[in-house]
Length: 328
Image (cartoon, rainbow, N blue to C red; front, side):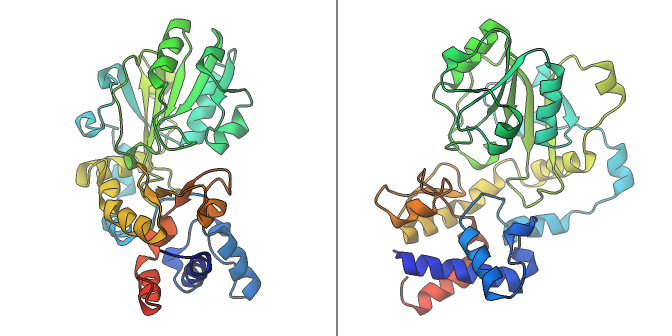
């Protein structure tokens, strides 16, 4: 079990390793030290535990490196995902058309614009970027009204679990003719996936691998939209075919849950070392209310979910440090 001082030293190891090895750095400027100055390294140390991005490990990086990209062929590629390889959560795939997705955020914008005369709503605790787009927050499904349009993460972003009232929400949306966009970006990383009883209200589903693989700038994914498509959507696609092609390749070559299954042992290992419980979402663990890790949680003290991604990415070097110190 790690104490707080050792945990902080591990964060220093992460920051210094990111400075030394560019392949371990995140795509955003704040996801690596800006320089080798002690101030910049310390600034990165304070942020190592924050946020949640796809882990850069041998499993993910090796697969990405193996992809032979022919842009001319990809440009001509017709989106054709084998839905038998998608998770079965009660959605009739034959009722949806596949389109290359620009990215989740722009798909949300397009969805809301399609229903611009309706009130856009999200549940409190939704993905922070969705909160910047949609200002109307609700806490209970009874607050869903007839002229609403709902954006909902599946699993729910606040705790990376499918909401216990998911079926009731969708049933109410169906009864009130409220269109729903399901953001399924975290779905490939969980195991507890129930079958939905009523999916009639679901109009759009966004499926991406940018939380599964470290390709956040590529925006790989596929959008499933309920038929029929508009003439413009049929004749002039606006999505990112490269991202859709990568999504399809990953599905064909590795399978939807490959990364989740690869990381379960790493999750078990680091949850044991940190003395926390493994969460259903493979990148996280759950600390107790008494644990010092609570103030380093993803909610920065307001929650109990702890990101394991830094330990996955720097597993070898942190393990060696802890072994040398005879901590493990």
